[in-house]
Structures are given as structure tokens and as C-alpha cells.
Length: 216
Image (cartoon, rainbow, N blue to C red; front, side, top):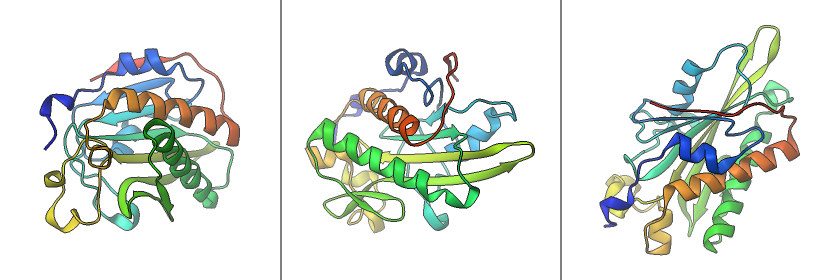
């Protein structure tokens, strides 16, 4: 089991100061607990909300995966977050967002940790044949406004085998388990947001705005 003190709390202000994003991460919120970050981010969004809002939760009590599967979200052990985006794509073309997110997550894991993740379609990232990350994209139509896309991300970071329920222990893995050492979640979050911002702007259209941070 990895030391409890490594499960450091995320800080919105610190993340914002380090990310310096153009789009994704222009506003960052960190919640102590929520049901699902995909649901929670809609509570902070309005019809005029600019894209780039990112909402993290230290603990999800009702995290969702593909096809309604439950995502196990051990408190303080992983990165659970959602991004509010307004990509110029058709509502039935959300698969482009899923591919973008899982490819970027894979690239960050490969670059930061010299691991070799694999993409398992439709929405998983695996290490050694076991799930380490997943993405859930939900599209919302809006009147007289571009489609709103919520891209939810879950990454197993500092879990030990005991943090997964028995039925998942042979199918799930964390980065810490793969590396045999605990990781700095804040540092990983910064690397993820920087790369998601860069690759999103390369593949999709995104405007510029003034950053803001909120920790609740």
C-alpha cells in the first residue's frame, strides 16, 4: 500500500498558475466530493459559458463509465475531472473528442513515465492489458448556440490493489502500481491540462479568454 500522505489535495489556484492555458483550464474548479464530474460541471455552466472550464473532484460517489458502467473513484487517489467544450463538430461526431482525449492521455503517460499505454476503443487506456484511464463524452444540444460537449476523464494514479473492488482487481491498474512508486497528482494534472489544451486547439477551434480559479 502506498503512503497516505502522497494523496495530496489538488488546488485550483496552483493548477491555474502552472497550466497557463489558452482554452482548456482557463477556469479550474476543485470540489471535495460530487456524484459525477460530468453532472457537476453543468451546474456551473450557463448558456454563455465559454469553453475551457475544468472541474476536478477529489472523490466521485457516482462516477460513470461507458454504457452506464460505474467508475470506481477512490478518494484522493486518482484524477477525476470534466471539461466543458464547444467544438465545431456535429453532435453525432463526438467520437472525435473521445479519440483526441484518450490519445492525449496516452501520450502524456508515455512521455512523463516512459510507460507504453495502449488505446482500447471505444474509450479506454490500458497498461499491461488492464484499465488505467477512461473517457466519457456527453453532447448537449442548446438553442441558438453551438453544441456543448462534456468530456469526462478518470485516471487511476495512486491506488494500490486494495483500493479496487475484488471484481476489478484483475482488470484495473494505477500508474503507481505500474511504476512501483506514488506520484504527484498535481504535477500530472498540470501535464495533462497543458497537453489537452495544446492538442485540442490543434484539432478543434477554440477562442481565447481570461483565466479564473475557484476552490470550493
